[in-house]
Length: 177
Image (cartoon, rainbow, N blue to C red; front, side, top):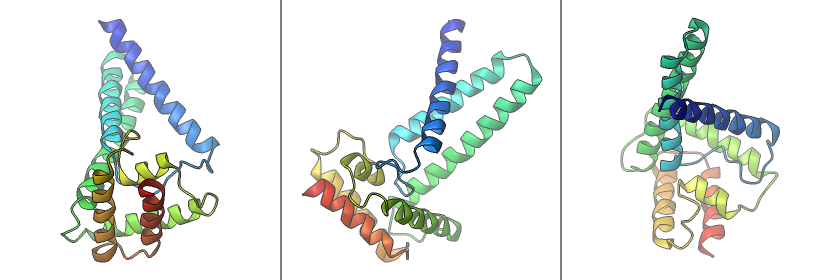
């Protein structure tokens, strides 16, 4: 059982390294997004990574490795909590967002605008990622419409970034036409 757990720990670390490497080596990939509603898949990957890095902390006797893995786990935990907060706030447009989150999301929308200069037409995968939906969702037009309506309400009530309306329009063109 220890060997299987160690294998899963190594696979989780390799997966994280591959994701980071891909992010830095292909900055203009057509499916890359800066602004998105966090999905359940991302949440599950983060919690799984936290679990297996925690397992690595318990298994390695070297204190420097334990400290390094603890720092990594703290970063993953903080990012997961931020993702949870963003998802909760974006999917509940009726209430006012905290100021720090509004600034953060406005910055992400501006980054998305810069990314969209290279690829003005969204792929289905990119549009679904922005809406926080799984890639097998295209048949579910109702769920897509609900997420688009939520983003429209956010654009009207909480997020003053004018480019959000363009993002919504591009997602709608890609997924509902």
